[in-house]
Length: 158
Image 1 (cartoon, helix red, strand yellow):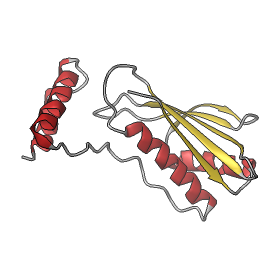
Image 2 (spheres, one colour; image 1 turned 180 degrees about the horizontal axis):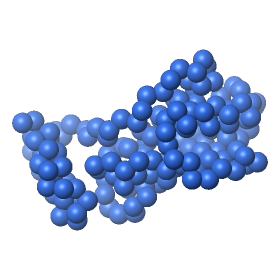
Image 3 (cartoon, one colour; image 1 turned 90 degrees about the vertical axis):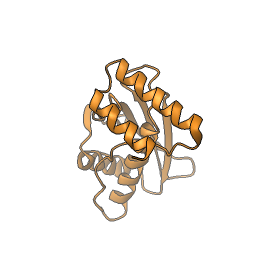
């Protein structure tokens, strides 16, 4: 799993964007592990799912070049193994950025984090590779036999 980064530029000042970030994170129900208001920084934790031990997320609001503010998001898996995150870290950062944007532009309620969606496998090799990945997760004890069976059915389309 790899680290993910995302930067989003907003026209609002740093204080306004930071306040919107705090509200958005509260609505999304991420766990705030530390706050540094002076540095406009939040450290967050995402929930564990059937396919991930969760993410550690850092959100920093800084002045943007040319005015406005920059929301800098960084995501790193809690468990540092060779487990593939299937884009979960990237989706989390997108979700946070979209929620901040919604707060800054009218306060629309953001959606709860969605369960990770797996990309559709194409070709026999891709199907076999996907099955091998999930079998390895099962063998490592990360997935239960039931979770593996459900994933296998989904990959095979049965």
